[in-house]
Length: 326
Ligand code: ACO
Image (cartoon, rainbow, N blue to C red; front, side, top):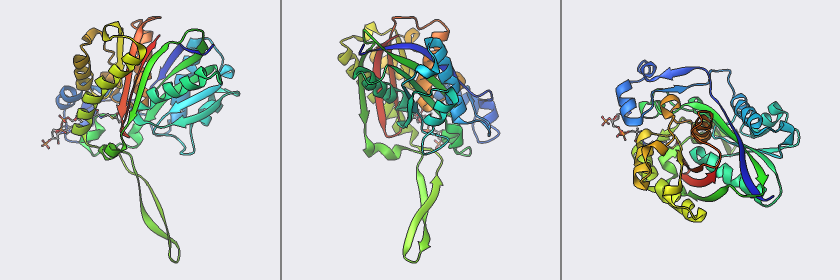
C-alpha cells in the first residue's frame, strides 16, 4: 500500500472572537474598510493561557476520531506552524498530549504554505512505505506576533488549527502537487528575529534579542498571490493529468476574499466551487486550509471522491498546490 488516502479531518479555534468593530478601539479603521478590502468580519484570538499545543492537539484529536483510528496507531505527526510554543519544536508536546506513543513528531515551517508543504512531506513517507498513519496539523497563533498598533496587519490575522489524517492505501488520492520558494522576496513578509550585540566577554559580542512583530508589504504580497497561485495550480493539475473543469472544490489559503475571487476568476472556476470561511476567522496561516477543508466536510459540501485543488502561499516567499481526491 503505497498510495495516500485522506481518512479524517478536524479543526479547533479559540472561543474568543473579535469583530471588526472591536478593532476600531485599537487602530484607526472601520468595519467597512476591513470588509470591503479583505472580506474578514471577525477572527478568533487565543487568550493568554491558551497554547498552540492545546489548539493543535484538539484539531488532531478530532481528525483521529473522524479517521476511526487510535492515537497509538500514528506513525508520524507533522505540525506545520510558524508560532510554536517552543522553538525547539512543539510537535512532540502535541504527541504527548494525544498519547501517540509510537509516533515520531516534528515541526515544519513554511508559513501560510505550511499545510501544503506538510501534505507533500507526509506523502513521501507513505509512498516510500516508511509510515502508514500520519497526522498532519496546521496550527498558528499569529495574535502573539501581530503588532496590534499596526492597522495594515492587525486586522488580517486570526488563530486556529486544522488537521487531516493520511493513511497508506492501495490507490493514491494525492493526484498531483507543485511547490515553490523564492527567498529573494523574503523581505515582503517577515516575523524576523532582531537582536543587538551584547558583550559576553571582552571582544566577544553575542546577539540576543527576540522576534519582532509581523511586517508585510500588502500590495506586493497581493500581486504575488494573484499571479503565482493560478500558475502553481495549473502546474499541479498538469501533474495530476486533470483539467480545471474536473475540480470540485478550490480550497485556497484564506488570506483575503479578493485574492480568492481573483484566483478563481483567472482559473475560470465558478464561485460556487470556492470554499471561503475567512469572514469568520481571518487569515490563520498554516491552519487556514485544513480549517476551511474541515468545515466544508462537516457541512457536507465536500463529499467522498470529490476532487480538491488546495493552494497555500505566503512568507518565505513560498507557495504550493496539491490536487487530491477526498
Ligand atoms: N483600516 C483603514 N485604513 C487602512 C487599513 C485599515 N485596517 N490598513 C491600511 N489602510 C489604509 C492605508 O494606510 C492606505 O492609506 P493611505 O493611502 O493614506 O496611505 C490605504 O488604506 C490603502 O492601503 P493599501 O495597503 O494600499 O490597501 P490595499 O488595497 O492594498 O489593501 C491589504 C491592503 C488588504 C493588506 C491588501 O494589500 C492585501 O490583501 N494584500 C495581501 C496580503 C495578504 O493576504 N497577506 C497574507 C498572505 S501571506 C500570509 O498569509 C502570512
